[in-house]
Amino acid sequence: MPDTQAADTPPVIEIRDLHKSYGDLEVLKGVTITARQGQVVSLIGSSGSGKSTLLRCANLLEESQQGEVIFKGEPVRWKGAGRNRHPADNGQVLRIRTNLSMVFQQFNLWAHMSILQNVMEAPCTVLGRDRAEVEAAARRYLDKVGIADKADAYPAQLSGGQQQRAAIARALCMEPQALLFDEPTSALDPELEQEVIRVIKDLAAEGRTMLIVTHDMKLAADVSDHVVFLHQGLVEEEGSPDEVFGAARSERLRGFLSATQPH
Image 1: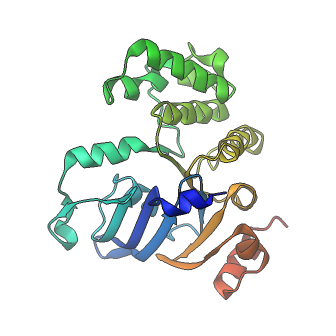
Image 2: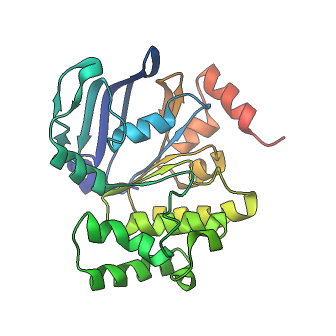
C-alpha cells in the first residue's frame, strides 16, 4: 500500500483526460488514472473497452490525440494537435518507455536468442549498461521468477508459463519505475497461469508499482490497491478491490462481474 511519503511525491504514472481514436473509432473518450509509487492498479472491463490501448498510450507505444501523459510529474511534450499530435522529444519518449517496462500477452521473446540473452538485450543495447553487471542481474531475476535453470534454453523449449516468466524477468532487468502488464495470463492454460500469478503476487508484495490489464478478477482482487472498470472508453467505476468487487454501484459493473463469475 502506498505510504504517506509516497502520497507527497508525484505519481509514477498519471493520465489525464486521454482520448485515442483509430480512424472513426473512438477507443478512449477521456480517461484519467493515477498509479502512485508502490501502488498496484488493475484495469478491468469487457473486450474493446480500451484497457490495452490505455496501457499502450501510458508508455507511448500508441499516440493519443488529446490529454496528458505524465511520468513522475513530467508531462510528455507534444507537437501538433489531434490526429497530427506526436511526442516532441524522442529522447523523452525513450526515457519514459525504458522506465515503464511492458509485459505482453504473447511474451514477445526473440526466438533466436537464449532466455538469458533475451533478458540482457535491452539493458545492454538500449541503456548501454555493463554486460557483466547486466548478466548478473539477469540471472538474479530469472532466479526470482523461478526459471534460473532455463537461462541457456531458447523460447521454443519453454512452456507458455515459463516464457511469460522470462518476459517478466526481461522487464525487471530494465530496473523500471513501474511494470505494465497487458493480459499477462490470458494466453496460458489454467495450470501455467498459476505460475505467472504467483510471480505477480510476489512483485506486488514487494511494493512494486504496477498497472495490470487483466480478465482475471481474482488476480485483480488479490493484488490491487485500486481497480478501474472501463466501459466503452470511459472510467465507469473505480475504487478499492472491496468497493469494486464487493459493493459495485453501477449497473454495468454489476453486470460485468456477474458475467465473469465462474458458474
